[in-house]
View 1 (tube, rainbow, N blue to C red):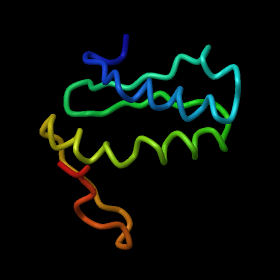
View 2: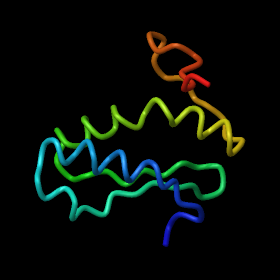
View 3: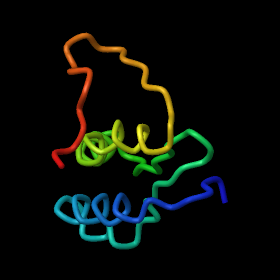
Length: 87
């Protein structure tokens, strides 16, 4: 297995979002987890499904990176520096 710690909420969210688009999404193996200071998200194969799922989980990614002590790399000046989930 590539990940050392599973982020269980991610796979639940990805499947729930995917089920709205594709009835067979329940069969998917979408998962997410950490390995060292990396967050790894396994996304579906279709570009449109990737877009939908990534937009669903992305708000939590910066917070996950903070929790595991990873560095952030800001690549888009239009995106706010702090995109943490509300407490």
